[in-house]
Length: 167
Image 1 (cartoon, rainbow, N blue to C red):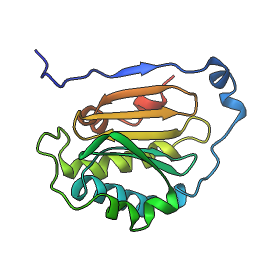
Image 2 (tube, one colour):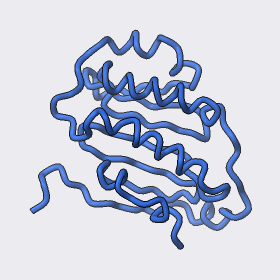
Image 3 (cartoon, rainbow, N blue to C red):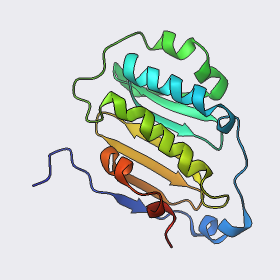
Image 4 (cartoon, rainbow, N blue to C red):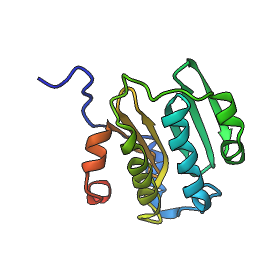
């Protein structure tokens, strides 16, 4: 019997019009693409030390959506410049890592690094946004073809890159 928090990998197909035009588009470099290291360091800090339990990075539009453990019903949308300033840490006072988190803190950075890999692995089929929820342990992915995937973080980390690009 799987654990209570177990969620199997799910895939949802998006807008057929977007999928139909996939090979007529290519990834455009964004400001977040140029500042991955700074972005990932900030997200990791906010998740490990400031009570953010869910973060969604919108790579194509260079913004982040954050949910705080202390106020889970209200999310914040930040442009890249706002994310990289001291303001988010000020709004999210220091706190311990959630005791009920399924994702261990040392897995946050490898998950974010895999987002970078999926963003740059192909010019037409690329990651547009990725999310991590450390409480329920889910990674969410939205690709340029408008396909979305949701899977447990440990399964995401164990997945070979070819999984995402096989026909």
